[in-house]
Each structure stands twice: as C-alpha cells, then as structure tokens.
Length: 309
Image (cartoon, rainbow, N blue to C red; front, side, top):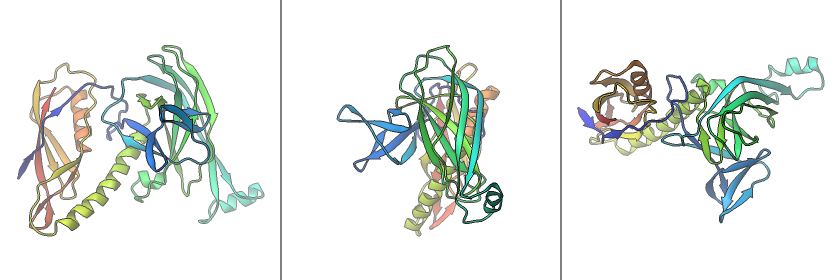
C-alpha cells in the first residue's frame, strides 16, 4: 500500500554537519514555576530567562533540556582549533588508589571538560554562550536506551563579524557512569548559531529521537491491537539545503517505512546534484512514523512524499 504525505516545501538553510544523521537545529529550555522557558542568555554558568518581560537569572543546580527546531535562525559561525579535554576525577586518597577505583562499578567518578576554540562569526552576535553536552558512549553505540546526557553552559563575550575570538574555559564537573563523548553548540540569545559541529551532535540527537519514537510506537501498537491504521508521520525533519541550483521545481520521494516505523530506503524520481541528493537521503531516512497496522499487526509500507523547491 502507498500512502501520501502532504507536500513538503523545501526552504534553504545552512547545512551544519556532514553526517549520515541530519543536523539538529535546537532551542535550549529550562523549567520555571512548572513551565518550560527558553534560555535567552547565560550569566557565567547560570541560565537567564524572561519573566514578565524582564530578564531573570536562575541560580543553583538548574535542569536544562533541548527541543528540535525546523531550521536554524540564519546565524552562522566557524569553529577552528577546537580542543576538548576531559580531565577525569576519581574519589580516592592517592594516585595508586585512583587507578584501582576506576575499574570498580560503584566508583564515584567525574571530570571537568576543558574547551578551547576559535570562533569566527559571520555577523555580530550578542548574548553569546556555549552549550557543552556530555553523553555516554554506550548510548551513542546503541548499548543502552538511556542517554545519561548532561548539559553545561558558559557565557562568552559578544562576537564581532569577521573578528576571530579565542575562548577557553573549564566546565563545572560532569558525573558520568561510563566513558563520555562531548560536543558543543553555540547560541546567541535563544537562537542557535549554525556551526561546523561534530557528527557526535547529530548522532546524539538522532539516537535520542529514536528512543522516544520506540516508546511512542509501543503505545500506538497497544492501542491498535485490532483493525487497520495507515502509517502516520511522527517526526518530519525539513532538509537543510544550501542551493537550488540544478534542482527540479517538483519531485516525488518514496519512503519505504519498516514495520517499526523507521525508514528503510528513500527513492527520488528525479536526478539531483550529489550534494543535494545526500542531504535529501540523509534527512528523509531519519523521518519516523507510527507504522501501518493491518489486522492489528504492524507492517511495512511505502509513503509518497511530494517535494517542491
């Protein structure tokens, strides 16, 4: 059976990461008085939000989270000479004891992340801050569905267009249970700045979305133990294309959707330049669906997606 999803209008945005997982434009949130609030700035290492039109600095151990946005805001910067060092700490009274404790499952371990980099902004940026993510490798490798991710933020100076700025700082401690991978995001106010990010960032967000999708599909199947239901898109990621040169005005993408709701294959009915074809394939392959159900059982299907450029 072939399902049809509404026309996807493709707009042009900077492609931020060269990875099989698509880039992930992001907004940073915290919770205040029981409601999520966008972080609009950082003072030292503490988030700032707007409350009744006034800036409020949240002190103490503030929980932070992220949400996907459909595209970047248009702000851009290049990171170069990036160096990330994880300085491991172990609860021990001597170096010899630390070496033996590191291998114990119950050991109390942690570490500072020291980041140095040069940032060259494409335009003037104010209220700048860096978000440092620490994510355990077991999650990125698919060995667990618990990301155990931790977020640290750090205020940096305003950036001037075309004037490279050197940053160097160490975060407050991370407390991982296993080996840690680290990536960074750059913000100006509540807007993420598109940078040449590490593929680790795209991999982390893609893996996290797959975990959430698995839980939602489980509920979908439990609610539809009888009868039939068409596949329904759950996560539709707009492809971030850098140019329309050589692209057809219209095209059809056919997505083969597995019984678990993930995309097995993408077929395009027109020829595309290699770079655009890769972006379309990587992005559409990351779409997630509530699977088609026939007589109470999930089945694979094909979804036709009209594209307009």
